[in-house]
Amino acid sequence: MLPESVPEIDIKEMSPLALAFVGDAVLELLVRSRLVGTTRLQPGRLHSVATQYVSARAQFRELAALEPLLTEQEAAVLRRGKNASKATVAKHATAQEYRASTGLECLLGWLYLQGQNDRVAQLFEVLWQAGGPETSSQQG
Image (tube, rainbow, N blue to C red):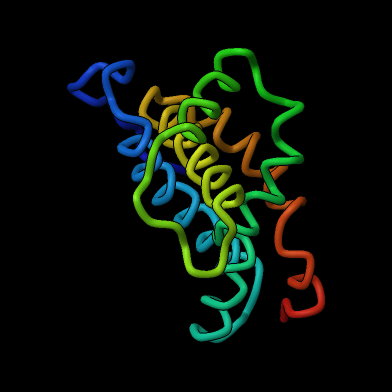
């Protein structure tokens, strides 16, 4: 699924926004891989369907399904990401949605950088089911 990553810097010393930077890429790769592997959509259509999973608004919705499944440590990382200060907010999202999406990306980056790809895959399955409600009628 994802290549193993072993950072040279202690993860505890990384900023939540650096973890979110990595988590954003992890989520994007997982969503794109799933769409390409399960649909026959054209590239332009693939992009619009992918955004139903990776936009701040979608991640806010997906996070509601994930939060009950998180360990205490994962929930702490999520909170750390949500509380990270960011000067800008996405155009199509509220501040609350943007903070939640940063928290989710922080969590995914943290898990990935620790080599917990099985846990990333587990959470991604839940996220996939919670996101993109319009995709079922568009696959094919």
